[in-house]
Length: 240
Image 1: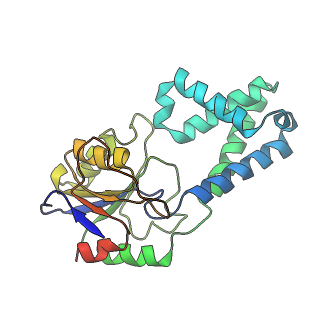
Image 2: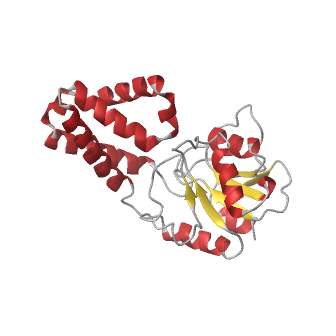
């Protein structure tokens, strides 16, 4: 069902969030996390002393100590692994090597899936009429999951670029596309990161609610999306 809250204006490009907008990210991350723990237990035996909750607690502490890591999920995971291995008694050289090996292992599994054919078909149809790009707070490899053929580019936070809802990626996208902010239409599942981020950047927005294979959530106290949809496939009709 489509709900229109604010009349949309002409737009020249469409940006998409990736995780939980174009696919269900939960089982992907669950498998990748489990695979990483198995790798660490096998290759770095001292990690058997820790459970997943210990790693989560360490990561939370590191994000509090180094808030810049909030905006770089890949760097945050590397630092978490390195510091964890140091705490568990590994040398700095071994901890650095182990952190890189663990990160590489995780990233491989994190992008070990493909976006459904129906989603790709929808994007191809939209892409025949508008430039399409991706704006994600995560670190999935868009090329490995089949999105490189439909997106002109995909932006990630890190290296000084802040995560949504900060406007950095929206501004960069508009600059690269050579369009005004108000002519970018952003589609995403997060009311905070996607809708508030797009609105604060001066872009138009479509809220996918519920997120991919999840339950519906209530709107927050922030700005309204221009449009709300409950199934991503509705974009094809909405934008026809």
